[in-house]
Length: 434
Image: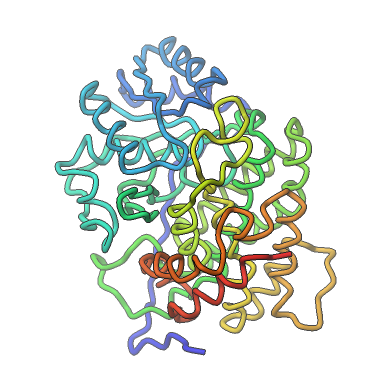
């Protein structure tokens, strides 16, 4: 097993987070907060499904009562593409200027708002800022507007992170834009907004929470990197004591709330614990980083053919376009990925399994503990049984592995060096999980 032994080990880790307001009814304080900041005209970014719940209109009314004008863009695409982001950016440029941007919705709406914020305050086009080698990897030169993120799903952590994720359709690849300035200024987490989440959306986004926590907890430690100068440091700095704390708490909260939130959507206590877990996991991985399961998820989602999951259509039925939801795509290769990374940090993998399943019996082969526990959670909440169930087979492995290897920003955080053959093996083991 290849390990990372730097000649001059890093001695510094960084930590960043948005301001946070958490609790039932917290969304109704946004008007006060914006008025206090001097904002008088804001862009509200959401998607058709969330708009249909009435929450964005309700929010706009509360802003108007506080003297803040809200212009609503409600066409964010679930699992954004470069085309859908450009549509939102063009709207923001045409309707601006704005004093702030508010995102209300899942990670897709929040990521769309991040792209709008970036491209309405900085020159250039979208692909200028997309991570290399897919895009040019340009950094924003100008400060962005205040961005307030109000998640309506529990999982993506986008309200805490510096990442905007998108599909680049022409290249059949999912990638992102990554820069510290993309991090929202404030996250307003109101668990009441998640009560309308369909069970399938709760399941997929919940697996995203688990993988955020598990990947950041098992990421290569920050001390395994070469020492960097201040201008060279990136948001994903590796496992560190502060991120570890958030990840551990997220796992313990999910152990007691996840299944109940999926099976009993009106359980506000379970929804509140899950919303807190999503927030904690976002605060962890938004600094430590994620690795192999997320790298694999990008081509899995980007190369989908016909799979249309339930719960993602505007009426709560099947999605209106082929898609593998992000959290589902991340989870499908996660059991095999954690089997691969076990030798890098056995104690952490065992500890993570114990946090997620406190009463589970430790198997004789402890390298199977976390993969087994995670696969059982996936079965319990109704996640597909492997890549085959979402339309992939042996003939797709080479293409998927090639796509995953383009995600070097993520693979650099893995606790072991990862070759294309390693990724192919992980994906092949993920065709049928049970």
